[in-house]
Amino acid sequence: MLFHVRMDVHIPQDLDPDVRADTLAREKAYSQELQRAGTWPHIWRIVGEYSNYSIFDVADNDELHTILSGLPLFPYMTIKVTPLATHPSDIALG
Image (tube, rainbow, N blue to C red; front, side, top):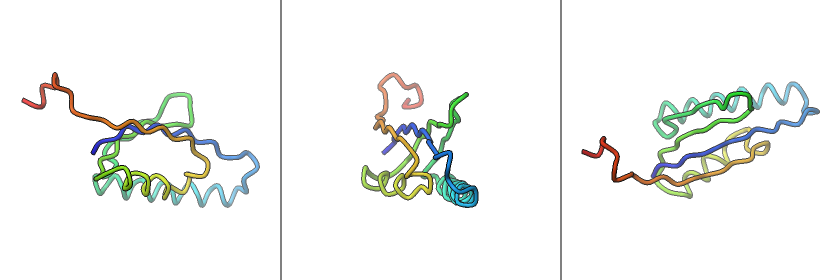
């Protein structure tokens, strides 16, 4: 199943700098692992915001929830999930 996910990050200004650096490093490693596995095939930065649009390719809602809640930045995120379906006018469907 494909999902379009918007993630808006709101890291507290007063978060300890060492905790912030560690969290960001773990976030990058985790997200790149998922990208290499094909679970997170697309990620785009939203210009001017600490946000991204991503596409996830997972088995079901539960897998997506597990992945998103496992993100080190999850406690600092607002997330909006949109399930996607194929479109009958998509020429790639042949």
